[in-house]
Image (cartoon, rainbow, N blue to C red; front, side, top):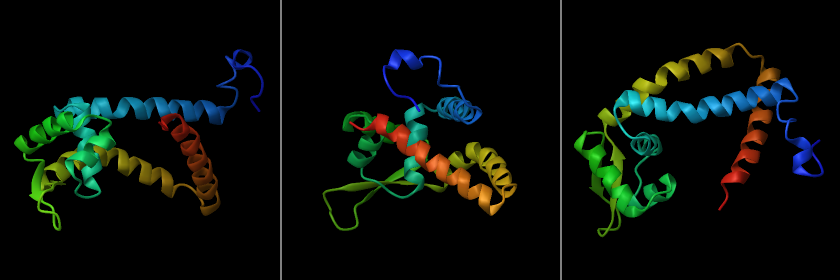
Length: 154
């Protein structure tokens, strides 16, 4: 367990195989989106916007919050994605003053084209696990995710 002064643990991060594997995973994940964005010919922010919209339509201000950008920057991102045919703006269902941004079939295809090979490999890996192994991996990853999200809190 890491306790005491931080300088005492400078070299301890990779002390176990599981911690090193987790570090390798986070490094690979950090490199994935920029590489996919380059292959798709779009900015990192545009790709992340498409990923957020994959779950359902969002207002421009909500999309800006999720991307961590200003509403003006979000508008520019949305405009570029509209030009490519990947998203469309529609009036909000209950508030006429607002608009929603939703993924088009083209946008959905764009996201899946680049992510599908990874999804397929991860699914194959998951099928190799027993139910007990899957439960341990799930618990470990969820707790690791909580630890990482603590760094992202504003």
